[in-house]
Image (cartoon, rainbow, N blue to C red):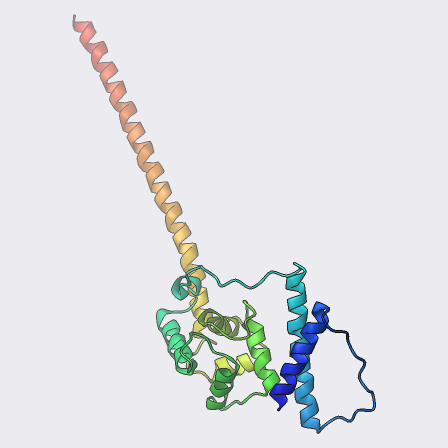
Amino acid sequence: MATDELSQKLSRRLQIEEGTEEPVALDCTEQEGENGEKETTANADSELGAKLLRRGELNEGQAEPCQPSTKVFNPYTEFKEFSRKQIKDMEKMFKMYDTGKDNYIDLMELKLMMEKLGAPQTHIGLKNMIKEVDEDLDNKLNFREFLMIFRKAAAGELAEDSGLSVLARLSEIDVSAEGVKGAKSFFEAKVNAINESNKFEAEIRQEQEEKKKQAEEQKQRRAAFKELKSAFN
C-alpha cells in the first residue's frame, strides 16, 4: 500500500515538474498517521525530492550523468601501502558479504555485515557509512571503495565511533598497525628507489669520466710516441 502511494506521488510530482499537471494545495487539517509511518514517509519524500532535484539538474544541463569508469582497477598498484595478503583478506571479506554476487555491497548487504560483526547500525548510520567512501555516488560500495575504508582507518582519518571505524576494527584485517607500517615501508621504498636511481646515474657518470680520462691518456701517449719517432728520423 505504501509502495502504491509512493508510486502515485512520484508520478504526480513528475507530471507537475513536466508541466502536464497543476500543483494542488494540500488541506492543512488532514490528519497524519502513526509516528513510524510519518518518519518513513518523510524519509521517502526526502529521497524522492533529492532524485527529482537531480533529474531537474540533468534536464537543465546543470549536472553530468554518472558514467561507469572504463579504468582498469588494480588494487595492488593503487593500494601499495597494504601487503598482498592484506588485500587478499579484504577481497575475501568483500566477496563473503557480496551475497548478490554483483561486485557491490549495497545497503542491505552492509546491514547484514555489521550485524554479523556484532555492531548493528541504524538505517541512517548505514547510509552515512556508504556516503563517506561512495566516490561514484551510486549508494553502494565497490571493492575499491571498500579498500578505502581500511586506507582511511590505517591513516587515522575515521572518527573513533564511526560505523566505518567499527567495521575496520572488528574485521580480522589489522590495518591499525600493519597498514601504517605498510604505508611507511611504501614511502621508504620510494625514497630508496630514488636513491638507487641517483646512485646508478652517478656510477654511469663516473664510468663515462673514467673512459674519457683513459681516452685522453691514450691520445697523449700516441702524441708522445709520434714525437719520439720523428726524433729518430
